[in-house]
Length: 267
Image 1 (cartoon, one colour):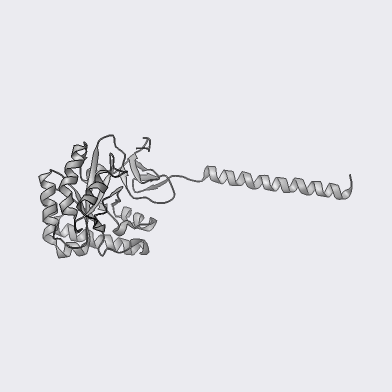
Image 2 (spheres, rainbow, N blue to C red):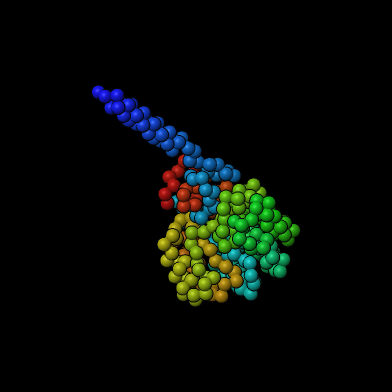
């Protein structure tokens, strides 16, 4: 073997060893990289913080929620319909809305519905700092406490917009961040029948679903009674979000479905 051939062989083996070492390091990093990060009493299965979109439960329980940020013309009618159907819901209210309609806040509370935080000014909170997020929640929180004595624990980010900072800020204040898996699309003003069909035939509707509606949308009040009756006929029981979610010893799957620790994540 010539000297040149020997040098080439040595170089070949050194290159092979280097590549093998890099592969081993990469595999080790993947295997041992933490996959579960704890946050405020729950566990998520990815590095990204997730809000609660729905809940895994064997019971046919669902929750209906209303975001209140503009107007109150239909609020008394919504409360009347909910009462007639013996349904308790969850209202996520902005601080600005509470300030304009304090009597509605008291009426919602008196009717036995959940009071939820929807921020002070309905900003896109993923654009805010942690301190700004906390301020947005605290101002609305204080208004509800002053009006009703309630210490809110449920928060829905405006526009459904969130990032890790938003969720971590809310969790640090004792809040559970709530999204939805059934959007009524009432805010698009497609009409009464469109809202009914969207909710009652929604592909994600199932045990533990959270339905999104708005107190100020054009056709919501007209559609609500039929929706409640239809879903009850399907066998669903309505509960406030506070009675649907798990508040401790739970995990979150990659879709934002909350379930007790140690149970399969699939619905």
